[in-house]
Length: 181
Image (cartoon, rainbow, N blue to C red):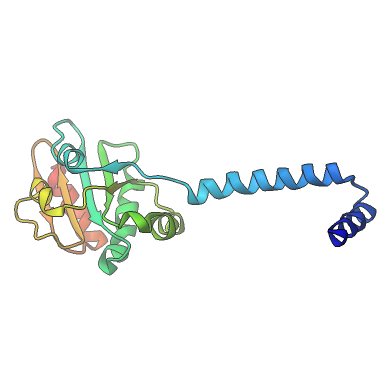
């Protein structure tokens, strides 16, 4: 205990701050740290279950939807994610909406998914699947889907295409154009 008081006296002499001022400064630093780390680590993503997936894949309006099912543990998914981000950024003011539906495990969100999204500067909409009973909702996306990733549904009220493979930038843009025209 005596050593702690000696250290406080030392800091007081070096900084000219009283113990109360040092504690206030430390509290401010702590609050700023907690708030900033909360923004980076404590983020949450919109969650989607079976009913939400069905709604997400069956909208009937004047928008074309590109719904990509992916995960950070899926190498081809990680490889193609930039293509979806490029499509999103090119179409921010159009009737095209890119939605990235992550199948990452809930215990991986903080440590893997959110840092990945930040690193890749993903601005497209991202949702997290919470219904881990995949067999209960995969057919709602497409009856022919085996469950393999990556998988992409491109649709609007008139056309619908489901692709169960990694897409190059050219393939993605071509498929979107075909659905839109």
